[in-house]
Amino acid sequence: MSVDCPVGVAQQAWIEASMSWFVREFGPWPSTRGIVLLEPATTVGRRRFTGTPAQIDSTVRVVCELMEIDRSALTVELFDRADEDAAATREGRRAVGHYYVRDGQAVIALDVTEASDLAYLIAVIAHELCHVRLLGEGRITADRKDHERLTDLLTVFFGFGVFTTNAALRFGETGRGFSVQPLGYLDERTLNAARNDGYSRLGYLTEREFGYAMACYAWLRNDPEPDWAGELDPGPRAHLKQGLAYLSRNARPGEFPTRMTGTVPVSVRVTPKADRVRLAGLYLMFTPTEWPPDAPGHRPS
Image (cartoon, rainbow, N blue to C red; front, side):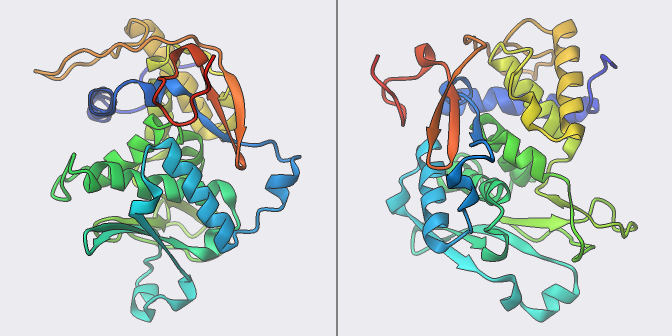
């Protein structure tokens, strides 16, 4: 296996600096808490998920809790792709989710045609709620050129990286040629507009960037051999392993190789192994000794 970083120098520095900034902005506990995964496919609960409005709302509530967002202060709207503007459809644009503010309240809109795919739905919800944490809370502005990419990266930091990473590249039988839409929109678009083989991308980071971001997430947790690696699709899993091999040769545990001038080095250490708690169609891997007493889902010892 190559021990080179799976992304270029500029992408590496941006990912590492952004992950360190997340620790300073949100504290270390989102990354030390654990990673969110779907229940095994054999469970009755997952088989019965069909994407009804009630199920979507329940999923939004779970993700809000894990991201420390007040669900009562959030409006969730559902839309059907069939109702999209015909001109936008002809131009090859397809929004699967978006975020905006109306009358001072955050609004996220979700495409119901994707809702029956629970993993994909969670990826979209996580992205839009990360807009709430970044734009809605005034941590960044929409003028920041990398704000959509930063939003994707924050999903990794909050433990939803398996969903957004696997959604970064997937197959589709129709709807090729999607392109980026403006501010706050999450789009599905082809990997390469010149190709016509059904590949599509969700989000703004590449599969390789997601793979290295997941490696940085695991490295912050001092977890060089994460047992959740098998949850990732083969492509990003290879980038994750390459990234961890690179970090193990070039950085101390819990730290990153690159530093940006003026930033404070960040080190987060946790016990590598974690217990699992099942929660509303998701399960959460966490280290009980590292769970903050005031964090959502804390269980007294």
